[in-house]
Amino acid sequence: MSTIPSTGPHSPSSKVRRRRKFDAVRVMSFISLVIITFLMLLPLFFMVSTSLKSKREMLKFPPTFLPETWQWSNYKDIFDTLQFGTLYGNSLLIGGLTVVGTLISSSLAAYGFARYRGKGKNIWFMLLLSTMMLPYPAIMIPQFILFSKMNWIDTFLPLIVPAFFGSAYNIFLLRQFFTTLPDELFDAGRIDGCGEFRMWLKIALPLSGPALATVAIFAFIYSWNDLLTPVLYLSSSEKFTLPVGMASLTSSRFRIPPWHLLMVASVLAMVPIVTLFAIAQKRFVEGIVLTGIK
Amino acid sequence: MTHREGRRQTLYMYLFLSPWLIGFFVFALYPILSSLYLSFTDYDIIHPPVFVGLANYTEMFNNELFWKSVVVTLRYTVISVPIQLVLGLGFALLLHQKIPFRGFFRTAMYFPSMVSGVAMSLLWYWIFNPQIGLFNYVLSWFGIKGPAWLMNPDTSLYALIIMSLWTVGTGMILFLAGLQGVPASLIEAAELDGAGRFKTFLNVTLPMISPVLLFQLIMGAIDSFQVFTQAFVMTQGGPNYSTWFYVYNLYTSAFKEYRAGYSSALAWVLLIVVMLFTALVMKLSNRYVHYEGGGNK
Image (cartoon, rainbow over all chains, first blue to last red; front, side, top):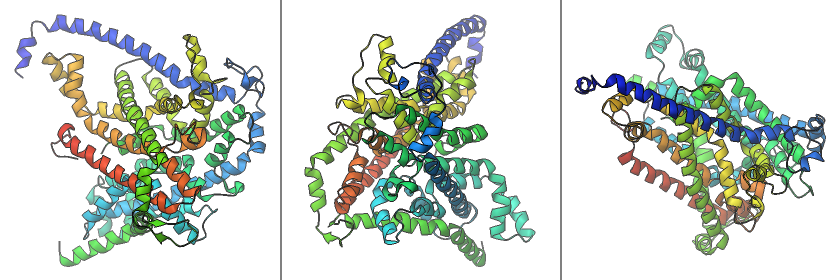
């Protein structure tokens, strides 16, 4: 308050000066943004253009910006060279089931944490938070031994089943969201004779669209990109996931890496993620923010 | 709360928690304890484990590859995480102004983050190819003759660090959200008091977004302790072990050499490092990080 009078007489001129200074800053910012964006998008541009080049053209240096002949057949060849259809299908199946499992189990646990004050809740919540930081490599060996005793090696089960038992990160995220739902809704439900389980299904879940979408997207992307887990468990090539199959493209079985096919695979691997992003762009960003700020 | 109501609350809480509770015991607690036990044994996964005391740990500290992996991972973390934070915040500050095509810039800068995992590794495997790759081509515009990147032990780790900066968009979005949460009245007040842009940023904006900074520091460091995909796809830990990351070392000793006991010791060291690191950062942050409303969180 006390500062207001002192700025009185000088404020008009200082405002003008400030605006001009701001403009210089903004012009510089704009130019920097153009350069940064150009550099960031350049690899993507070449990813797409290389994916359409011929075997001969992909080895040219300097690389041509646009293909001399647009070789659309590369996108057909990847299905023969790499069993791409199988890989893609496997990854979609595993990703889809992971999403289903994560949504059910994580929202149940999150509801338990958000809506009830049972004995020992704080201890369990602390344990939940501490498993959020748990590095997968630290537990993968006993998990591997466990799953191999269950004869689950070379099946999709080790990649899917754990998702049905909740993931700490998503439980935390959903719990944060559930606690913002007004108590009155649930009180009203209880008066109407609604059971506890039905309230989770009919009140909490329908009101949590954005949070559930975020969890679904994160679970899918995590599963879609995961390399370490499928590398451990899958041994027969018809069961490989997309990342495992794609990783084999850099192996020494190719004398010269088939660069154009590498790029085709990368472009196609991006498709589901970009689609999800396009559908739920706003929620996606909200979701990143939701998980990032606690 | 009546006694009966209390019991009802407890009953339903555990009912809803039960899937996660099973998961916690089977997929988290049991593996942690089991790997602690295994770390004191010699175990090839086929024959029963043999108790060897601290032998795995003493071997680890005398093992050249173990130290190599520690140095590689630490160097990667110490260089890439701060640069990622600075660039993420810098880009967010650029975008946190009234600027034409703001939405386009934001999407464009986030876009690379969607090419994560193996796809990104394949793309950059090509970009860093010294004969035909994009990176040395772009350098040649400025008259620079680039090195052999992934094929040279002196540059391979730096190539992976450069690659990690490509996905700085995720961090940028987090910072942007943090910046939007800084009340405009605070900034105005600082400016009225005669603070310049830089001073306002240092004394108002930065403390206000320090929780975001802290979160990204912890998550970024924990992620880079666990780098695996790049090493597996692009370099196989080479050349000459220059990208022999900690988790790649763990993976190799467990699943290529079938030394589950020794690898469990490696796993436990990783676990302890992650816990200590998180605790240390949280402790330091009590002093430096500002949480709205006074209390922590």
